[in-house]
Length: 392
Image (cartoon, rainbow, N blue to C red; front, side, top):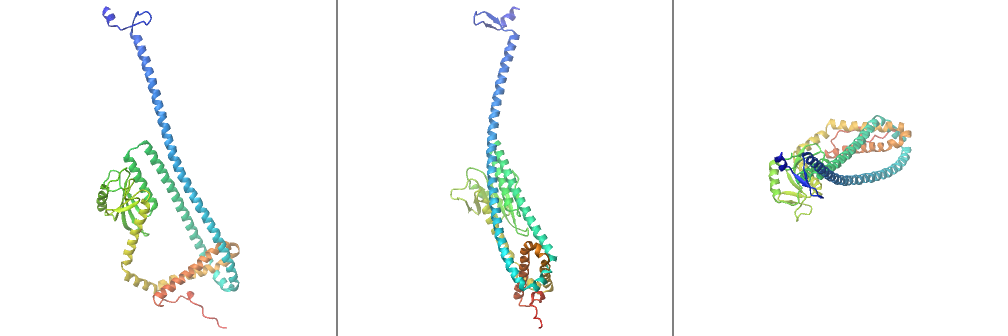
């Protein structure tokens, strides 16, 4: 009992200086109270830090979203202005169309017999022309909708990329976001080309663009390397040339945020094109156009004599005459039948009739051009010849 009293801790009363032994119960109570106070202070500090981080993150997200919405508003304003201009142009065309219709009606008073014979044949092919025009308009609207959806998706991707930048500020992630964004821009700008991105961590450049012509034939390749750094390095050029030889690419382009001091926008250095972000797509269009011109020149030089012989043989044969005759007969039938619906549908089919006349004139001109080339040896098509004078 004495040994326990010696080791027991005591405190002094601040008033009477009397010793007060610290029992286990009193010590545990103090320890629990101090621990609780420490836990409350720690939780309060964590909540304060969390609220501050969430406020900063929300502010950054609102700023990025406001920028994206502003870009979308600008694009919509441009589209509205373009639509207004097109409507104004359509109004002018309609006024010109009305004037031409008045002149046409004056001429038709003197040519009633000929017009009646021609117009009776127009209705059979009129429906085909209407379906073709309708399908063409629907396809144009569909392509515009796809383009708008792709632009919106691209803007969403930009907003997502900026949000990820706010969460993770690593330089590697910024470079990957820039590569993905530039690859998406190439796909939107050149939808017919094959755009292949190199996987992260793989050797080689970032994007390989295979340029294709109107028949989807590959006519050349452009190798792209994208750099998002604060300082420019000449060592990038030698590495990109090695990647170009490995990929057998026709052209190599370095897109960098930090341009050399002697290159304000873009230039060729060491057989590699160096460009900034703002001039990357215009440079891509120029390089792509050069590859297409080279391919056209190469294709035109191949088998030129054989093509001329084949053209002469085709233009002098029965198949060409039958095709031209079929087109002329169809146009004549369209013009003949159109008169039946002129009163009710005059405003609708007037412009189409002009197109049909243009088609007949174009076919006649084509026939005359080819006939002149082959020396007047084409077989005669009666509907493209003058009628013999009638006997009195």
